Image (tube, rainbow, N blue to C red; front, side, top):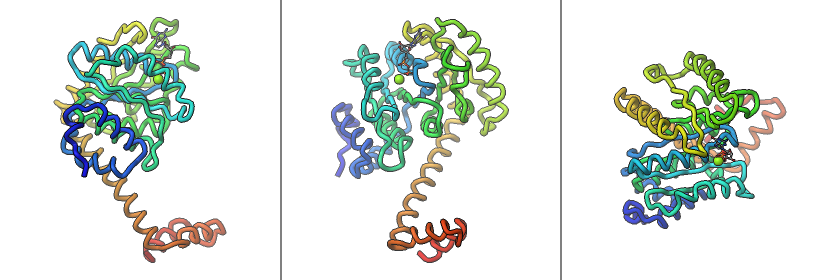
Length: 315
Ligand SMILES: Nc1nc2c(ncn2[C@@H]2O[C@H](COP(=O)(O)OP(=O)(O)O)[C@@H](O)[C@H]2O)c(=O)[nH]1
Ligand SMILES: [Mg+2]
């Protein structure tokens, strides 16, 4: 049986061990997360996303320092699936965050694993849950790029920061793919570089368009601010921390926090049920039936809809 006491008491080794188990999708991780679940739901999870090189790690570092000065405990999860073997980017992040190391109020973890089950988004969400249970007040999750995985990870976070930097290709072309719709705070980092104003202007235009396409009408009460920072000097980090706190206040006072949490749990339950039922069904069908259906579909003898209905009926 998993004993949650060390993690709840702030044992960093126990926490690190659990994060590794989560990363490797070990059975013991599921047991631990089940035992810790009642202690979750207290942390403020903040997603930080943007193109490689825009300054996410530097900004997370600057933000963590501001949060520490305000007496908050901070956990950082740097997710970089682009370098699973070399670990190059992760080493860079370690160096950048060196000045935070040794502070017992800070916990830093890098992960490149896509996870065996449920993928990167699942791993990240479970890591956030473990850090939440361990008592960290602010959890910063750094993710690269703007693919679907990043949008999924954004759904784990209550506040999503989208980072842009001037001169990274064609103005704000780095952010597309639906990431703007989930942005709660926009940051133009490297404001010490030329053309920062252009990036701000371009973002403002995109934000207006994205506002029209926003899925959830209850978010109408929040207009994502656009801030400028120079992460390497800590410039704008205080203002960013304030904007993040304002977003949390808005989520709480409007009831959106509650709505989103319910939605998130509903999604998670649906995804887990789907996985379980599919496993059960394939097991019950026995070997070959699934592949046989695929062969028939390949030969155009059977369409996917009918194949699924047949398999579900036969199971
Ligand atoms: N001039 C300038 N350089 C920055 C700023 N923020 C980050 N950098 C540099 O940009 C590079 C990429 O930063 P990093 O934080 O690793 O970006 P990430 O890939 O988004 O995590 C590093 O060489 C940083 O020192 C900034 O505000 N101004
Ligand atoms: Mg980084």
